[in-house]
Image 1 (cartoon, rainbow, N blue to C red):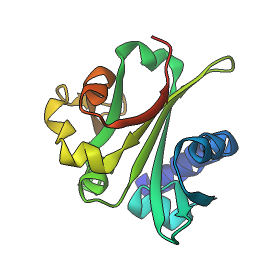
Image 2: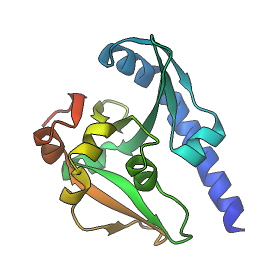
Image 3: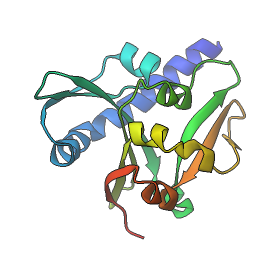
Length: 168
């Protein structure tokens, strides 16, 4: 039964996120140099590698982009949150990010009237060990997953933000 819930939850979340992908792709094309195209990842790439988009660069190299969508209500915390633990023990976004599977992290907050975002250089996050500056881990309301918050201000100071559109 838990597997069914996870699959249904994934499909619901993916369907909602897919509606935003044309706008996100446009932003990425405007803010990453030397991209020839951006394609939506397969379900397997998304679930196993945390890759929502694949950016194809002019030199032929593909780079994986993770996308995280949050309600604008959470922007007041002035942080990003990255899934750090699952009760099942399955690999999480932070494991995949630290493992170098992702090159960029597009994190955004949305309402019908607002779309704010930051584009993060994951290699820079690893190089600067941005995770050491995370606030204490928080438990999701489902009680089964956990997240680490990292302040946007700290990510700016470390030079991890490539581009942003955030109203302070």
